[in-house]
Length: 90
Picture 1 (cartoon, rainbow, N blue to C red):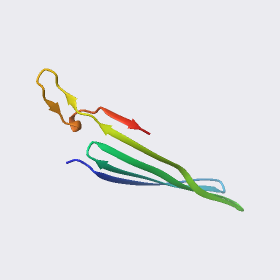
Picture 2: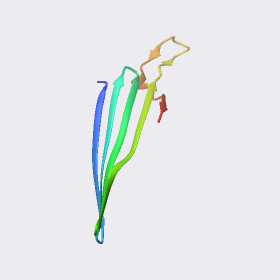
Picture 3: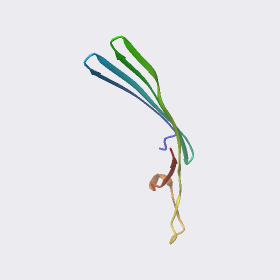
Picture 4: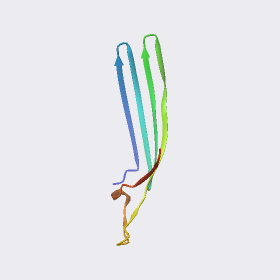
């Protein structure tokens, strides 16, 4: 079965002494045939005594396209799921 949509959410927490940091990362992917587009972003909160900072981390977009492989001897096409060649733009 081919995957057309996916989402991933991650939560990270770290602490050292009186400092604490939390980060949330989200990745969304949507497939349109052989083309897959993706969006990644994160939000970060850092706390120290008397100080707190928060805001968006990096926001990234990307695209991947799977190609068919042509067998020259038999003239057959192998589906992209069986051939791992991809072209991506991060």
